[in-house]
Image (cartoon, rainbow, N blue to C red; front, side, top):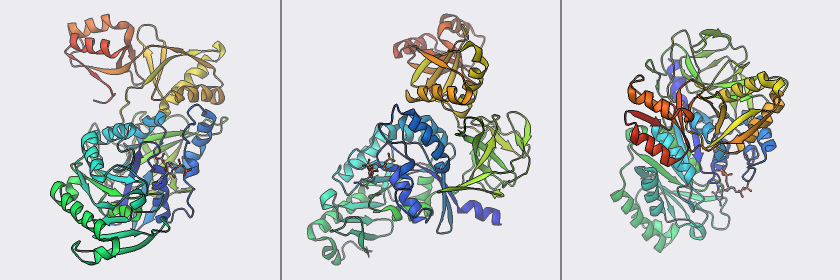
Amino acid sequence: MRFKEEINKRRTFGIISHPDAGKTTLTEKLLLFGGAINEAGAVKSHKIKRGATSDFMEIERQRGISVSTSVLAFNYNERKINILDTPGHKDFAEDTFRTLTAVDSVIVVIDVAKGVEEQTEKLVEVCRMRQIPVIVFINKLDREGKDAFDLLDELEKKLKFNVCPLSFPIGMGYDFQGIYNIWEKNLMLFNQDNKQRISKTVNITDLEDKSLNEFIGEKPSKKLKEEVNIIKEVYPKFNQCDYLSCKQQPVFFGSALNNFGVKELLDCFISIAPSPLPKESIERIINPNELKFSGFVFKIHANMDPKHRDRLAFIKIVSGIFKRNKPYHHVRINKNFKFSSPNAFFAEKKEIVNESYPGDIVGVHDSGNFKIGDSFTEGENINFKGIPSFSPEHFRFINNQDPMKSKQLAKGIDQLMDEGVAQLFILELNGRKIIGTVGALQFEVIQYRLEHEYGAKCSYENINIHKACWVESTEKISNEFIEFKKLKNKFLAKDKSKNLVFLADSSFSLEMTKQKFKSIKFHYKSEF
Ligand code: G4P
């Protein structure tokens, strides 16, 4: 019985946003409410600052710190909350995509002045693909921004959301008076002199109540009534099943910096967000309340100490109870591993744990055996789905600069790729290695780490590649497939799992190839 209660208690989620929308600030405020940290600024200093685009030393420093912020766990109202940190820097988007395989729901933060931005669109697309329930938090209401209805429109058009506002702002920027909480039917009013504080919370069961005028003034109260009427007419009523099945996205307004609307968001979140969900594997669907343990690696973190190539692998527990010192079956390499010091993470510290439950994340020591996507079980062969690689944006040949160190270089490249720093493609034609990354910054990180951790020197050479497409052909011996391989020989490569990839040099040539070889499918991600 306790096992089921432990599962139901857990809420494992990620906060995503375009950089600067307020993800770090919101995370910090949630931790403050949960009593996990005592002062504002604790999380902030861990963030990779904007403008550090070429400062890889800073990235290195951050990499060390970010182990402790990878999972931010705390208890709140008898729930165990696990926030999985996602890097805000767009060059690390792939990291965020992978972290999204381990969350059960997501909060998207939108800047009221900027609306839906590019990075948000990409991340929401991944949530849609993975069927992750989403709540939206529109932030920075203390500033002038877009009209609330225009923003709701934008969410519908750009993110294809079916929005359901659960709160609504009273004024904005200079005129911002507070928020009407549709969910709890109360008004939260800002302290006009000091916008850092909520002056009062008023329960208003009926907006027609005359006292509304007293609280916010005649004009704003008339406007609020009209707006709430529009909401009732235009938007669907909140339906938890629709939210959980991604057919509806609740929207909150507030200001993370000013603590405004954050507690309301958290209170609603813990009551509607899903506890750990079943997870699909190639073999079958695994339910969290199955008694046997299963889990998968979604993140690997290299240690900062260059002398020890130890790594920390983050395992999301899917089912059963994970126990310290119990042997678990590593499905890919068909070997048993025992973990004597698995770590659980709390906001500012990590601790060795004896038991962990579905929804939790444990960090285990890895001496170079594990890869992202690896599964652990009590013996069953389970391969979890949903950790695809996406086509990188930047490609370069990687060359060895020191012939005496070719072994070290190969090992370094291998391990960095297992960690998911970038993707490796090996050309079919001549075996040359190509590194593909989401952001240009990773090339510097790789070069630096190869030198400092593996003693290997590399250089890069430009190559003109537009996109990497994973090739799917149902008939591998068809004439068309043979002709495709012959004609495009120069552009074909294998990824790390030996899948065939077409490296198109332009969108035009990709289009032409698609037209010519109709029986072959080209995918922008490795799982299809
Ligand atoms: P991110 O993690 O999504 O990149 O955003 P972050 O929380 O770092 O917030 C980006 C900037 O927006 C920060 O200002 C932060 O203080 C500010 N901010 C966050 N929430 C609100 C809000 O509700 N209202 C207002 N007015 N600002 C908000 P910064 O100047 O870039 O950083 P800092 O000097 O405050 O650290």
